[in-house]
Amino acid sequence: MEYGSGGGGTSGGGGGGDHDPSDPQRRKKRYHRHTALQIQKLESMFKECPHPDEKQRLQLSRELGLAPRQIKFWFQNRRTQMKTQHERADNSALRAENDKIRCENIAIREALKNVICPSCGGPPVTEDSYFDEHKLRMENGQLKEELDRVSSIAAKYIGRPISQLPPVQPFHISSLDLTMGNFGGQGIGGPSLDLDLIPTSSNLAFQPPVISDMDKSLMTDVAANAMEELLRLLQTNEPLWMKSSADGRDVLNLDSYQRNFPRAMSHLKNPNVRIEASRDSGVVIMNGVALVNMFMDSNKWIESFPTIVSVAKTIEVISSGMLGSHSGSLQLMYEELQVLSPLVPTREFCILRYCQQIEQGVWAIVSVSYDIPQFASQFRCHRLPSGCLIQDMPNGYSKVTWVEHVEIEDKTPTHQLYRDLIHSGMAFGAERWLTTLQRMCERVACQMVSGSSTRDLGGVIPSPEGKRSMMKLAQRMVSSFCSSISTSSSHRWSTLSGLHDVGVRVTIHKSTDPGQPNGVVLSAATTFSLPVSPQNVFNFFKDERTRPQWDVLSSGNAVQEVAHIANGSHPGNCISVLRVRLSQLGLLSTFYSELFHCIK
Image (cartoon, rainbow, N blue to C red; front, side, top):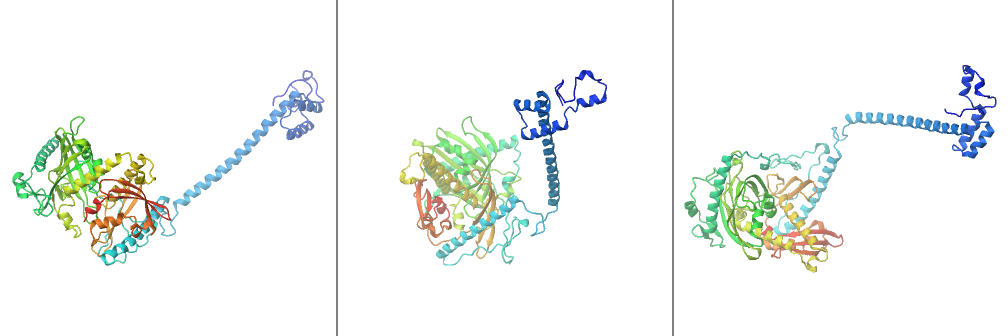
């Protein structure tokens, strides 16, 4: 410790210079200047006041016979000593606590290595797996209740009960097997819910083929020949096209076609293939450039035709066309076409899509199948030159003439409920493509209109931006609905009940679409025939007064339309914001008449 020098240290002290510095007794006294009485008095004062002021230090110096400077230094050193002691005590306590926690951590880790599930004896599931399984159970219960409600309503129309979902056998959390099961005709008591989350095979999963310069040259020749054939099909009437006496539609004269476009043999190996050919024309409310941009973009293509196109993907861009224009653009694409029912398989194509500007304001787009050797055996459909001719009209309208021409090899018989629709060519024909295009263009036009009456929006949607957001949400609802019941290669359906030839079919898939929550989507679908017209069925589902009869979300309560947004020229094309009375449950519905007409 540092102390002041000089006399006044103790009562018996004298001048430091009068003693021999080599005397050990004198050296010892230099480090013990304070007597026990002085230290006791200083300690007592320190307990009362660790920071004495100058007046208190002077009083202590007089009482103890010490210099004020000595008193000051003693208190400083005592405070430092006390602080050091407290820090040592805290460090010791923290070190002991740290050692205790480390030992507990090691013990817990060792225990987790040997933990087992008390129910099954296996390793425990993670928290995420538990909540995923719990969510699936809740969704399964809700779907079963809705299916029972819809089945009871449908039974009133067909005069006989519809088979119900059989009870699902319980399964343990640790052994949740989500693989596709085949239980048809096995006579077991109840089918297990063995469904595949992610299909093991899909045509979209193949590696893009390596395309050489020779392949590109061949593709260009195929596309040019297909364009020439399409233009003749679009612009020639009799004898190539004949008017049907039944409904006045254009029907291809196959004999005349064979003479004009001779082919050695069918592209499909089965000689008994079926030909579907149709042509239709109409006016759409969209200019030609916008239509071309939409048709040459695979993402916009599937967004524009969600009821027909289930999958679309550009495999390779062979030619990007002229700068600032799609004229001359050539793409190798993959697509799947659908009818909205699990009973109708999708049609898969690997096609070349070629765009050419014929003259100012006139465009032609042709699609033709192109056989890739390693995948050609997977396709049972071959698209002959098909496509459309787009002609600009005043006021932003366009006239579109559409041709569909395909060869189909029916490896399995078409279900009787859809046989007439499929074999007549209406399911994938030009009329359906053009009608869907017209409705889509009307929707886009309605979305761009800024003004809306208060009656239409009901005061619920206060701004044009809100209206556009609501229309985009409704379009995502339609796309999600169509993809959920598609028989695309990304979905695998399993029949849960087999009391009749259709049954209830279910599938689950993972949802990763933007704007949608990530997770597992469980879809259940069935098909039956009603002895009423499609228009009456559509009106029944659209009418808010009859909605409580079939919508389980309304719980039988009255439903009120609080906002109405026109989505096209047809009165049935609209978006309705519904409110269920009492429960105040909000619903959003979007209606399209084509969804019913396409399966009548």
